[in-house]
Length: 567
Image (cartoon, rainbow, N blue to C red; front, side, top):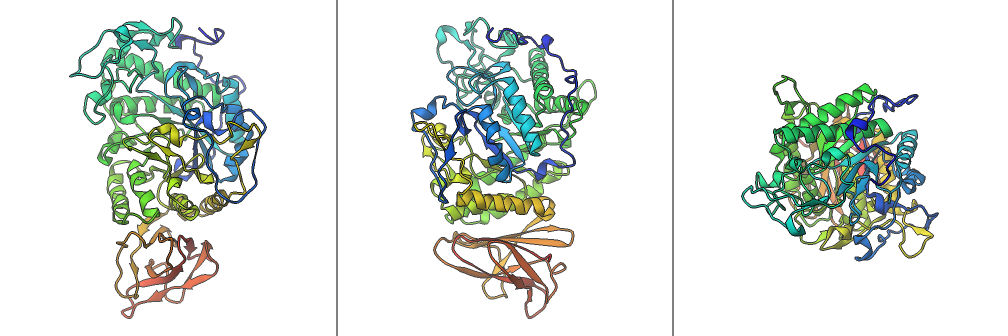
């Protein structure tokens, strides 16, 4: 085995607390307060000393189609040396792409061959420990991206041919690709894998659970003894990484491809281990591309599963909000009517009833590294102006949910193409060893930082109830917006405070409209003060009947503003 002085069996793993180690408990901050920065380790920064061009305008990411299909050279230590860039953007949590040793062809981390080693192309376990320690010194949490459904391409079917799922047929195992892998050695057991070939239909059950992700080999994840053994192995592996590096949460890949019992038991057991180390807020969020009604089977205390031992298992804290992702970008760009956005928040309200106390707070995003089902992959910045990018992230920071920004969005990256690598650009030049894209002078970066600071300083933007606000052009007839280019407004209300967020989605016309506000919190004669995007204040007005309270806003094209009723 490569790195032969390290553990290679789960029986070699020591889960007792590291001697002299005080594990970070992050005070009283809840996961719904975080602002997450998601990056691909290989694409953020390498080990060279580089600097950005000091300019206010947006930048395009580095790398051509050929370069972006291969390792670019980003490292853990490169991230550590530039954590101030993430901190100063206002992010409070860092989500790392998978760190474990991968198949040689993989740059993204989702093809694991050794779960007990950091991929040497990214660095060492010590580098990961140092990154987490420095992040904690900046009050930043660190989440690891983990894969429980499948391993890397570590073995072959007969003739090393492609096999495809066919009516649940089990195909023969031929051989391991390496005599030393996968690690831990307990995973070198063909009976732990479904061996049913590649998934053709990702929405067909049981194919979507039992099939392979292209050439990545799926583990059994039912109630069989083999599946339970896989779960025990993977649970101990990931507890080991909490013990070794003090990470604060896991983003779990491909959740819908596993049973809710499997996910719930994994989360519960790992959460119990984190409690033993004094980490009380360990965060689990999942990638779940599917109908929202399925979320309740995986999230929180309603994901309870009573089995033979009569225990109740608590699953994920949250999932990535893909339904919002598929709606928000077009609304912000003014090319889609906001009706579906309004419906999305109504759906969240209704669905949250079965998801526990924070059931409405899904992890929200407008850019992503993995754009399933889209013929052309494109970053939000591909067809968005600077103002639209600022408004898109501003919306996430002010609206319900835990906002997550995809690396490079804060610089205006605009990658696009037929494959996912097109939206996974490097933030450092692959030709000039002195240049990176970590430009704090960029207007988009600075405005996102200002909005993140605003969110951090206003409890209503983190905890408040959210209401989409009705609008009027005459102060008499109010309705929710119905046109592509419109004024979009919502409120966050926390006890006696109301914060109003408004955005003009037109890029070429001013928009002047009346916006409803809470009458109990905003009596006649009071005012709301601008705290972002404009100076001054606006008075609270009443209609002739005295039963509607509203403010009058006039916004320039693409303008995003925030107001508060507190002085």
